Length: 296
Ligand code: PDD
Image (cartoon, rainbow, N blue to C red):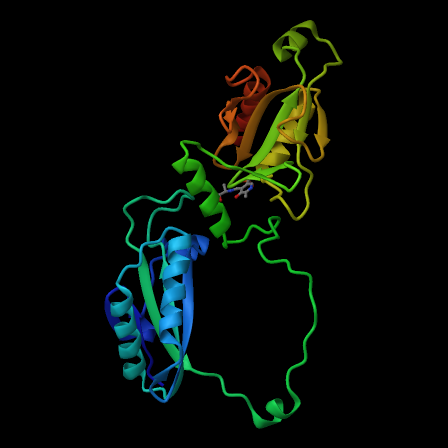
């Protein structure tokens, strides 16, 4: 069966239909879709599907690359070109192509893809017995420990942060515990002594504590997070991997970590200064140790 697809302005053989590897649909699952059924020229609830497509786009701040009327027309043409009487038509809209970074540029041209396939046929035998089902706990959007390409929530968080003049968002749980950032792990430091002084005096004990959320399904186990913990141990700090919140007493510094940031100080959260409101000495030391590992 020779199938025809529509990709960004062109109908072409499905075999040759391509999307750029820097399309954010591929890089981040940064896009939305609809599946419309068509039985013998009869498009089922086309209006409702188009309306939901428009709403989905609005919710993630993608401007539809064509009017709903034009998209309807393209869907009808794709159906006719493919000559499949009972068809399902996939309509995908992604944010478009840009060099990979969570924050997306304001001027980006969304991608529009339409493909047509035969509707799966249900056999009489299956219909006679019906389906068999199981129950599962709803895990959707809940497996932050998997470094999945499906980063749409992270994209939404980064965009919200940037639109409010911030560099990163901190995801917090129902009890305001700090989990992780949109693309970073998060740490706090408690304790008031100057680390440089501790080193100079060669004092074994010191009071600095490194706080970070424990591993589990609510955060990604960052490779840099491990480097940070190892570095903090070298500095003789106490590591506490436990739920913590920004309201906790005694927090003097805060920083984020990732492959692309090493350890990056955070001076303000929700317009409240952290500690002195400047990158702190402990963060600076940890950053240096992490960078030493990077450049080793
Ligand atoms: N992001 N948490 C999240 C949600 C992340 O996306 C990342 C990394 C991290 C830190 O992991 P690591 O230290 O292994 O880089 C934590 C990468 C840098 C990205 O998506 O660009």
